[in-house]
Amino acid sequence: MTDIRPKPHLSGIQLQALRQDLQEQLERRTRQLVGLQAEAEDGTGADGTWQELLASMTAADRAVAELTRALERLEDGAYGRCAHCEAGIPFERLKIRPLARYCVACQRLHEAA
Image (tube, rainbow, N blue to C red; front, side, top):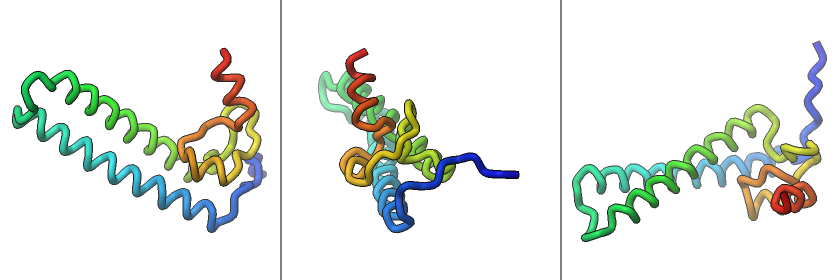
């Protein structure tokens, strides 16, 4: 059976660097989320900051989910490919925006819509 996935446009070293960055971000955000959850459970939130705490927990939870999906795409070979046109996203863009799902051209189209 032939594998029809496009060939990776990123080198093994680039993929490893991106994987490490994503894993470090995931670990950091997971620790942040656990800390926020503990703060909420302990009731140690400062006066009137429950909405801020909830917003922070939501943002951290969303970041953990996005980072997890990015690592799954990396394992599946889909990471670094535009979700719209399937063109390779340049390494430089992924280093700056590791969760980028679109090439620059498609990102502009997506934002304009």
